[in-house]
Length: 297
Ligand code: HSE
Image 1 (cartoon, rainbow, N blue to C red):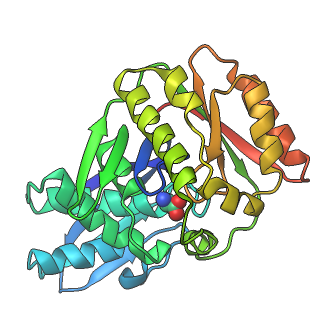
Image 2 (image 1 turned 45 degrees about the horizontal axis):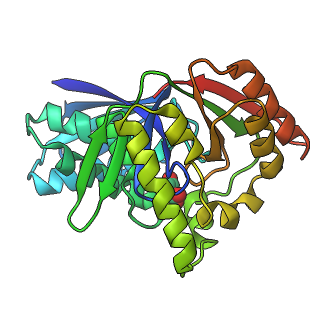
């Protein structure tokens, strides 16, 4: 018996919702196929550049943990096809982890609820990020816009507005191996109450924008004065990318997840080609090329 699951790329944070907001993006997909195998080993196969040791692979870790939790002793062959670019803030390790959790659940007819699937997928994500956060995995498992409450985990899904369109610019730069860990290391450990208030107001407005299907409201609330200022030095030309995209008609612009991709929130009626060009120009002001993708949630 064999099961294939596909999980989408995602953007985390959406500005002020650090570690809390996630949005699945119909841009790239990872695919994980799990087949029952002889023996008791978990064997990973992939023609993409992923670690083949199960305990170092975000899908492998999920499968190890789920096998332990549900006392599965059969050998498993795990085939991984990477579609989500790794290390660019597009939820790559989360997509593999999510697909693994969903495939395992279905292969063994576990009927797990979504919080439990997210919890297992989060274990795989932790391996690459160095700390646990469920924003990308939740979006990858549930799709749509998600709000993650923790202790205890409680994931809320909201259907995104139909007229929300994202323009993502992925710079062609070398990213550190443990990029998420590195980009979490630059964050302030303490924040000013005044900054927290501004971010909280914007985060609440973003959630309301999703609920009311108000793209303008959610777009203009993509403003983060805590995490973005601490991370933007890691993205060449960030200020220009953002300024240009806003001038070209984007409603809100921020770092996608832990970066270095930059994401513009726009409405269906915006000129997406113009916004992509504007973002490219911003990166080229720092001698950096980028790939742009226009996608929907
Ligand atoms: N919320 C996480 C961060 C997402 O910004 O570090 C990383 O994938």
